[in-house]
Amino acid sequence: MQDYVMALTAGVEKNLQVSGNFFHVLYAASPVMLSFDNNSAKTTRPQGMGQSREYTSVTVSSDVTQNVTLILGFGTVTDNRNVGNTGGAGGGAAAVAVLGANIFEDIADAVITAGTALTLAAADATRIELLVFNPSTNLNDFRLGDSPTASSGVLLQPGFGTVVTGTAAVKAFNTGATDEALTLSQGRYV
Image (cartoon, rainbow, N blue to C red; front, side, top):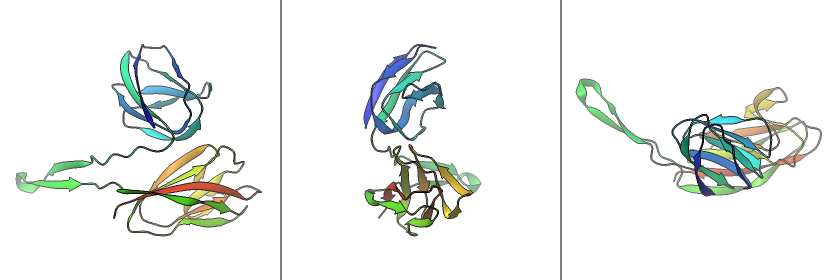
């Protein structure tokens, strides 16, 4: 992962030759448009947003002139600064802290037989998030959920990933005709 700081001129594209599987808009006063691998389809993201996606090049543009910082490369971004105060009854304040993961672990790839579901991760009270990635070399779509089927659950297409937040068990269903693997990592707080 590396920071890319740039000055964007309204309506002018900036091409970056960088490979990765994750992007994050660290700073942008207004949303930025990104396209990947010279594709005309644009993804618009405001400051603080990102996602898993394989790419070998990124094109960045904006409707306004602004300075932008992107984080690009292989991996993910975490932020443990989620601490704040909320006003309580009678003018008091209640401190709120949302804890992020303090351990990041790789998990062995999960090979899922065609037309079947497999538990990717058992329920774990210490797990904050499970990162699931469907490599772009795969041919099959997968469905994620507590009991996914060929037509139910969150769709995960080849070349995309998702972050499942929470402690519940997570299963994946292979919708294709061939056995294929998903790549996994997890963040835990212990």
